[in-house]
Image (cartoon, rainbow, N blue to C red):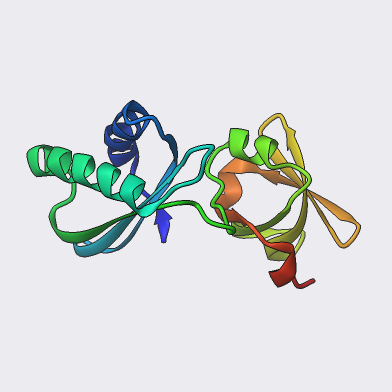
Length: 155
């Protein structure tokens, strides 16, 4: 899964927010004509199946008109869950002092994967403590990131 293209994000965000939800982000995987568009929404009370269905109906109608994805694809709307994906610097700042797993586009200090305590954001860098070693990760190097529940965290 990789983050959905910017043109899709610009279509999705106003619809989700217009329905009263936080637009967490969206991922798209697969090849043109057979992909999966996964949209994450949230709200303080928590997301239920009816919330996902309401957003899905609105987005399906919009996509029928705009046709932003060529060919067939599957639309999924869900809560971010325990392994909440992190897409923006604001997300990294909001969830500091929580465990995070980050995949990098190329190695930093000989690592492509960093798991540790999220310390926050400094300028355009995400700061993570991994086993006592502090990594200052340039945001543009992050391919994918998500919170990691403590019970599944392995050093």
